[in-house]
Amino acid sequence: MVTNDITIASPPGTTRTRGRARGRLILLGPAFVAAVAYVDPGNFATNSTAGARYGYLLVWVVVAANLAAMLVQTLTAKLGLATGHSLPELCRQHLPRTVNRVMWVQAELVAMATDLAEVIGGAVALRLLLGIPLLPGGLIVGAAAFAVLALRARGFRAFEIAIAVLLGVIVLAFAVNLLTAQPDVSAAAGGLLPRMQSTDSMVLAAGILGATVMPHVIYVHSALTPNRIPATSESARRTIAKGIRVDVLIALGAAGVVNLAMLLIAATTFHGTAIPGTDTLEGVHAGLAGTLGAGAALGFAVALLLSGLASTSVGTYAGEVIMQGFLRRRIPLAVRRLVTLLPALAVLAVGVNPTRALVLSQVVLSFGIPFALIPVVAFTRRRDLMGSLVNRPATTAAALVITALVVALNAFLLWQLVT
Image 1 (cartoon, rainbow, N blue to C red):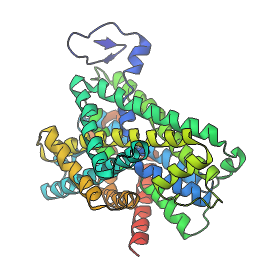
Image 2: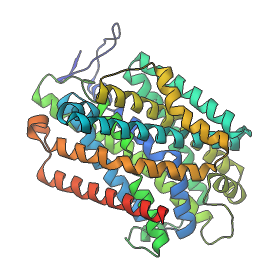
Image 3: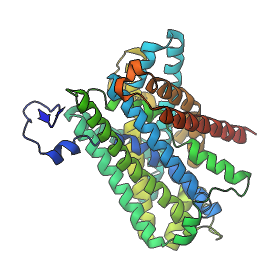
């Protein structure tokens, strides 16, 4: 069917007339899947710790990180739209075979590390909510992800809407907690001024900025836009590109609000107090219960559970995109789910501290950032690949600065953790 000059692919038997508003809404969705990576359990721990230790000092870091994420995800989605291929597929087509295999191995490790963080976060949430031990909780989260992934059999919209709903509930939970906490608005505004207090605050800033661009979600977002809404003309391509920017603005804006709320709530309730354990998920939950009440603690735990469930679903999908793109191979979803789930279950079984495991998973993810970011910038600046959607020089320059900054900050974070 056609809405304006955009051809919209619909499942058989569901074609019907769509108005202008419906036609624009169909452009939304992929960025909401990507946005889940920016509110995963690792973000819960990092932002809460930053607020508890340094108050409103690192507000500017959260804002800057979110703006960088918007640019990166816009380029990633545009890459898929312009070329009709995902990033892993383009790497297979344009890079030497040996390099492509190395890219595949590191991407698989990234997918496993991603699932490690998400499953552990969900398991911690189930223990906070229902008292379920971590290992059974991890199994429950892993199994529940199948239900979300199964929606893809009904079309891309069902999967995207499910993820968007989960993201919406997370936003709502933190919005309520933020209103309950009543942060100091003037002090929060003062946190927009870039500054640091110590080496430890720099480490936290590196953690926030460096973990912003999750490599697995770059692969996923580039796979969600090719041929999703086939364009019948050059003007249609430009219209879809505008829709991508709106999609990213809304979805990543919502994720940014959640991350900012995490920091502001912790800064308001924990900074300058003697409340123990605010650098762990369990400690934050207990601290919220003691300061803002049981409702706030419940909202935090529910949001953490939904974050883990949505994130692990996207992580499993990322594994599928990675193997299909780099190797042109597919394996059954159940096998893929088991492969990415086993490391998380092993960590839970041996009794590793959950928050420590989350931090270590972010270290693994940081190794994968250059492998995802650099090809995106390189491909989107090539007119032979992008056509009229090629980057403007200023866009490429901004993307290069962000890439260099994220890579440098991750290197700094790794050095700090090692030494």
